[in-house]
Image (cartoon, rainbow, N blue to C red; front, side, top):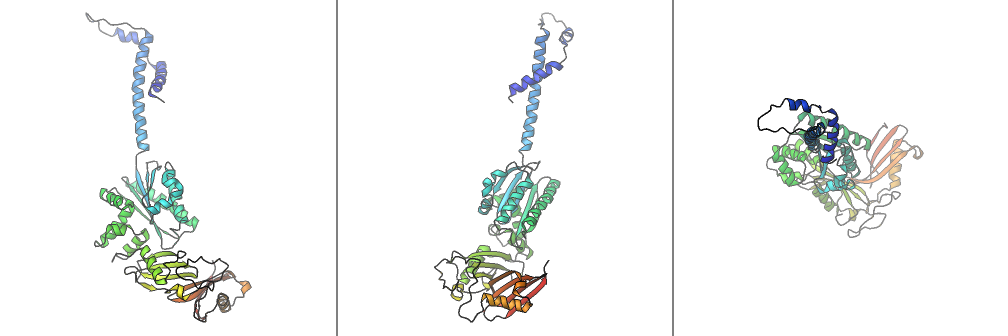
Length: 416
C-alpha cells in the first residue's frame, strides 16, 4: 500500500470520529486589532484537521512498520554445524533462517540440492537443521561410531542460546536415530567475539569450530591454528581428549600412507574410509581400503604416518577372480554373487571351506543358518575370513585363517 492510499484511508476513518467543534474553537480566539481571522466552513475545517491527523498517524505507522521489518531481518543468533563440512545459519528472534552459508567445499556438496543453502531461507531453524543433517548422513559423514557433529550457538542472550542448543540437540538426535547413524553430538554456546570471528573468516570455518581449535591451542600453543582448522571435528575432539601432544597428519595423509603401503595408489577403483583414534595409545588412524579382493584394514601412526599393521603389496599377494591384477589396470569390484578371491602362493582355503569350518564348529547345519556374511579381510598382516551368521536366537562371529583354516577367534551371543 502506498503512503498516499494509507493517508486517504486514515482520513476517511478519522472524518467519522474527529470532533465537530470548529465554532467553539474560533469563539475562544481573542480578537486582536488589525488581525483578520479567516472564517471557514465546517467541511473545510474538518478536512484540514483530518488530513493533518492522518498524515501524523501515517508517519507513525510507517515508522513502526520499519521497526517490525528491521526486527524480522535482524540476526539474533548464529548457529553453526560442523563435521568437516562447516555450515553457518543466521536466524532472527523468531527462529527463522535469514541465511545459510557453506563455509568450505565439503559444505557446498552437502547443500548442493538446496541451491547452496538459498532454499532454506525463510524456513524454521529446526526444519533447516533437519535437512542439513539428513544430507550429512546421506553423504556418509556420520556413519562411523567415532564420527562427531558439533552444534554451536552464538547469541548475546545467554538464555536464548541455551534454549536453541537444547532444541537443536534434540532435532539432530532425532535425525541420527531415525537414520541409524552412530555419530556423537557435541554442543556449545558462545558469546560474540570479534577476534574469533576474524579467525573463522580467514580459515573458512565457523566460529564454533574456531572456538574448538582455540581450545586445542590452549593445550599446546606450539600448534598452528590454520593447520588445526583443516582437521575434522572428530579429530579435534580426540586431540583435545589426548592433551594435544603434537600435530596429527590428518585423514587424507593417513589414507595415502595406507594405499602406498598396500600398493594400490594407481588403482582408481580402491576407496578408503578413515577413522581417527587420536585418544588411544598409540594414537593412530584406522584406514579401511575397499578393493576388488575385499576390505583391508590398516593402522597408521597419527603423528609419523608409519603403517603399524596391514597387508603389504596387495596386487602381488592376492588375485581377483583368479586373474592377476596389475597396478596400472583399474579394477572393478566383483558382483555380490562372486566369491572373494584367495591369497596367492599358498595352500589356502576357499570361501565354501571357511563357511563349513564355522558352521561345524558352531554345530549348526547350513539350512539352519541365515543372514550369512563372509568377507576376506586383513588382520595384522594376516588374511582371514570373517564369517557372520545367525541361527535360532543366536548370532555367531568367526575369524578363520585364510591360509590354514584355523579358527583365530569366535564369539556367540543372543541375537537381540
